[in-house]
Amino acid sequence: ADFERTDPSYTPTLDWWKIRYVGSDEEPPRTTVDYVDGVKGLNDWYTSESVVVWLNAEDLPPDTGSGVDVTYYTLNGGTQEIYNKDTGIILITYSPDWMGIWDVNFWSVDKKGNIEDKTKPENTLPIKIDAEPPYVQITEPANEQKVKTPFLVRADASDNAEIAWVEFDIEPFGERPGLPYKDYSAPWEWQCDEGPISSSTVFENSPRSAGMNVMIRAQIYDSSGQTWIHEVWIHITNW
Image 1 (cartoon, rainbow, N blue to C red):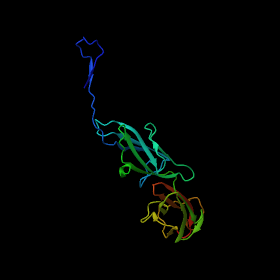
Image 2 (cartoon, one colour; image 1 turned 60 degrees about the vertical axis):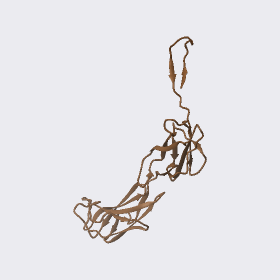
Image 3 (cartoon, one colour; image 1 turned 120 degrees about the vertical axis):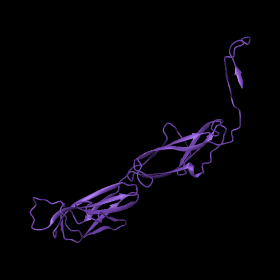
């Protein structure tokens, strides 16, 4: 213990005192992910255009360590950077694909010079961003085309990452057994052999001797959970 006072030495009063532990610090710090700021989608994807990774570092032993000196990180094994606790690690996607995949590797060094093992699995965080929704467009039949059941519905589908599936349906959407039909691989198509049901949409003022006007729908989903819908009107002559 160290005792200090500012009064003259002949004063018998102890003004204040402190205890300082002088010991051995042989343990490296420990760095963990505090939280990730971003919009989370499915399958570990983020769907926001940017994500911020926040870290927390503590020296060991908890009460007697020398203290964390600096925290480092790399992105995909690139240049070593110093972590800024005020801004975090900012990961940004850019046009045209709005997509990025990173392995964020992080570690700390304490004031004694002990270096954390950055090769441990818990010291790497994979981050995947897909901020661009998929796209689908019905190519056949054309809008307002006359068709007769059964008929084939075809669509073009695209995504910057991975298409999960494309759904097809006909009005009234979601009310027929077995629909929407899911197609998991190209070519994206569906053979429609459905019959009319009472709730189907009809143009009441449209002159017709037979048949019915209804909408068909294609809806795409990507691996991140984002979706896009395209619908066209058709006239089914044998309904």
